Length: 330
Ligand code: NDP
Image (tube, rainbow, N blue to C red; front, side):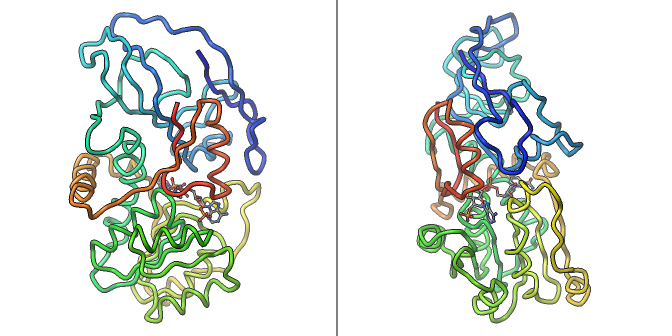
């Protein structure tokens, strides 16, 4: 059996030496517990924040202890009345190949119309993030224009499609020509902008959105956002979902001051964490599943094979190696 622990707190971009893979004993099943075998591990940008020794909305990882995230696991043996051998479950669990759990907070999922891994993406945290951030904070209206950064990732690819369902013009920003092709052809984005080959972001946004930007769904922050914000319309809504371009910074950088832009345009900028909408998760999943069934939503996954490659898959998020949801298959 194996586990992956946090060996050191990353300075700047994480490296493989910040993690360690340890051999551990096989777990012993007790009354009330389930014996679980990990099938898929979700690696997510927000885990970077948990590697800092800082107070946040979620507890920091402890040094020399296993990291954790959303997993899909198989029940190998059960002494718990709620679950039986062969069930597939999902929930927040430590990065171990096999483990026992009292199964608190774990939920049964079914292998069926979507692969099990989808419960870590489109029917999991990233799908819900896209749905609630856009509908509750973005308040999208038919005929408006939305810009989405990180548009080829798990959250961004979903946001673009939901915005299309709601009748908006969609402009996606991503980091390669291949990703631009994908967001236009697979996810229905009207326009794609490759920020890595764009000299002046503000100009590119102005060309793509001649009538201005009504909604900005921001997954990356930093200079990309600076270029979008100068193009906002009156009563624009800015959704601060993520700021991956800043997660590895050791100091908070100073950018253009946006306050006058927000005032002048009566614009709203709001951050959120998906768990704010916990009470509505059931409804969110139901809606996402319906759209999937109707063919209105598509999803992409980048599946990395092998438990030992989990740290590298996480690191690769910061180099844009993933298209859609980054997932490790055990
Ligand atoms: P993604 O699938 O989008 O993966 C990360 C992507 O970010 C990469 O593929 C890369 O794409 C892009 N990226 C990496 N570095 C930079 C950079 N310096 N500048 C611009 N883009 C960069 O991840 P998720 O969909 O899981 O998450 C997207 C964002 O949403 C993250 O910021 C995450 O923290 C946030 N989030 C927030 C939640 C909340 O509750 N508020 C919940 C879930 C996610 P490219 O090739 O295009 O650069």
